[in-house]
Length: 267
Length: 284
Image (cartoon, rainbow over all chains, first blue to last red; front, side, top):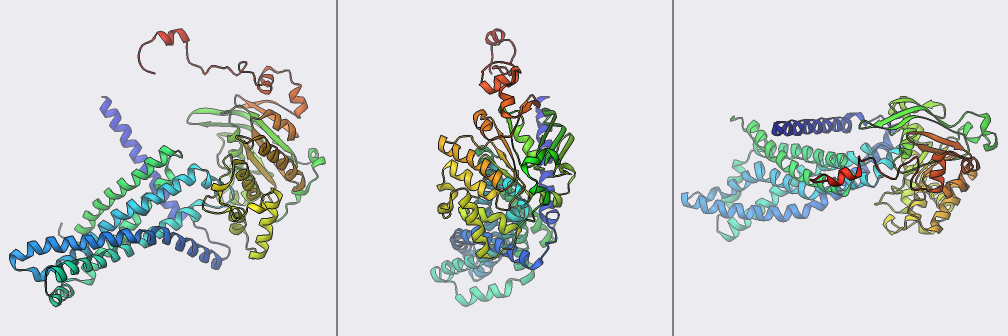
């Protein structure tokens, strides 16, 4: 009996949190925006805030993304070559590397790394601002933390992730080229021409970009919500940071399956 | 910067003649089913320093949050400058908040901005002052709290007392009609405490603002307040000038003012029979 009671409590708590997250998103996207008295300065300020966040959310994540993508591309080429060479199909290595990266690994691995590097930082920052009453102080100064703190971070995450994913794919292909062409001796012309012929701008690049945008939306949403919703204690912020990484990773992998199924249209 | 409210300029000496700046009428508030305020009524006259005294957890900070519109009462009225705070729409509430300031216990300074930028923050957000003028205003505010020389420091480099003074400079940046202080004396050394006590009184008189000080420091409250409210059990247990409160014969007031460990406020948290509790086996 206790088990069912526990299960019920757990479910109600999860659904309640989900409801809070949805209301939070509604407020973030619609409710907290009011028409400013002067549009020009308001837009300039919003732009400045977003650019600041683009630096800490996007630019500072760049290094880990570029290094990881180089290795992922190299491993992909190595593994791919070893399998393809048995069938004498090593000429398709370029295509294999490019498709795997553009469709799947680029957006997914970027989103996972992004959740760990930038998402956790966003949650911790917002959570600590809440714990030290900075958000409450802002509210009492008649400044809406939703538009001043949360929205710029959310927008920066939304913009950064697809761009980072694109860079991941590009550098990964260079890594694959290094191992495949330079080290293992696949013909350079074949490597690139196979890729050029086989990669479709809409089906492959487009679906990868779509995934990047969706993951950017979801990971940023989870990160800012967990920070804003955190219990304002050291324990609470630590738990929220962990939840951001865990939930973001699960959401990314789950959504990846759904998006793949939808874009391929096979299921 | 902010438009001067005509009522703001009412002489402090004639405050009794004008309507109070803040009034709470029969306010009931509970959190998670636990009653915190049970029909609390108090008024804050314009231009005065009013101290709200009470033990920890008696709902003093809740009163400030109700006045600032961060919480809504279950029932009763909360009026600030003639408007009912719980009935305000968000935009109206934000307009009202531009004219009131709340000084948090922690200071709540923005840790990523230096002292100057912290004080400049509300001015940058709400006005379009040219940079030259903004610099002058910020330096004037910092001079008022004696920290003009510390303007390049980051919040992490400030002592507790200095952080609170910076927060005070930020609170008066938009020339509010009222400043609320949440436990301003807690955790300060005697010198810093003396500075804050002096600042609250001087700023109140020089800027012709109204001050509400929530505290449990009896001596400091008596030193600066024109009017004291003692909160106990979710109601006002006593009110009056510091002299009247000191002269009170009420047991509740005397326990608090003299800091007696036992009295109407029991030393023991309610917890059943002691002997029975000791004899019972099992965990906590």
